[in-house]
Image 1 (tube, rainbow, N blue to C red):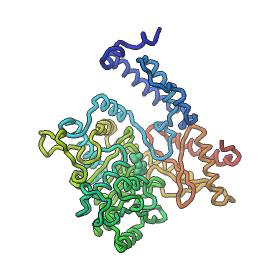
Image 2: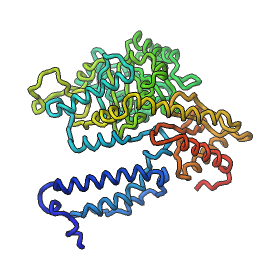
Image 3: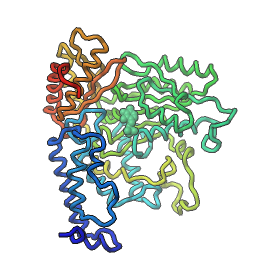
Length: 495
Ligand SMILES: *Cc1c(COP(=O)(O)O)cnc(C)c1O
């Protein structure tokens, strides 16, 4: 059969794919996805491919004529699916989890079908209200007071950037959205304070907001990698003395390296006294505030001006979904609202027009997947899963603690364990190389994937548990592979 025959008539006339064809193909795609989730563990977490291989296997020129859908899906199945790094794999224990639950995937599909663009109420009424509703569900789930409000963005990096811009706009008399910052004799250099362990996204936000990386001051941490409030106070006083303008403190609740939690209550007291904006980056660990016995880690966060928590990290929500919460929406609206004539609507002032609170005009309908997922699991079901991940981490940490030649390098409060192998007789630099070799060997096996960081200058291995598809068996496999790799790591070629 020629390719022309295997394509459909819709591909040759001027319409979209026909409805019957779409329905059939949608069932096929649903089967593809279900099959993928079923065979996840037949893949190594890290695909065994070299850079450039995937692209070289595909046509370098776009197809001029229609191609049969079967051929396209077949290439998807053989060239794309096997050659991604499998974030859904229960052995993916690197970085932070980013897992898409079944109900979350279904919500994402429905949102794709609706293609609702959530700019403002008039052109997205139900989607706007579902977003407001789900933001408020999340607020309640996180135990925050009802003066918090917010919205969804794509990532924590963007959420934090919007907060830094809003904080900058809140500086009295600066009027930066109108007048800019460059060339102004009346503007002192602006300062943001973060801990030495903060995520680099805050520096990126400073780049975008015209503050620059030099405007971000890193504050020392204590022996558990938490920002030292005394060092923060000193830095603020020193900068004021030097004629700089402090305006914002960013606390991290769950740092990226070790999930350390800055003391939110103390930061809030300092910010209140110094009249500084407090932004809290809880991208990963914020989800733990759903667990009643973990909530004390977040004491004081209810005084922040803005908070970011990523449901796409530890709440099994398909990428992307970042929750940005703020206490005073008017700061965001004042900083970002621009309504040209072509976007003016006849609907009264009290509807929410989300585009006025950030940079994007067009916005994805992200709330739908969370609305589905929260209803499907129930809050109790989500909490039970998060608890299980914390239990896995504690178990794993107990094995590390019990082994003479392994050591733990940070407290385990959530799903993350930081550790390394420390056999006797190796110098510090040799220990780093030794652990890097262990990691390489474990990751080449394919059943698990772990990552690393540096803590106090030491190469640190990280294993994080946060996948509802993972069981204790996966945790045990990880530990077994580490032990095998540690006994043979130094004999194995590193290629
Ligand atoms: C992961 C992470 C981020 C960045 O998240 P994105 O959504 O990928 O931008 C920011 N801060 C912390 C603490 C993180 O762990």
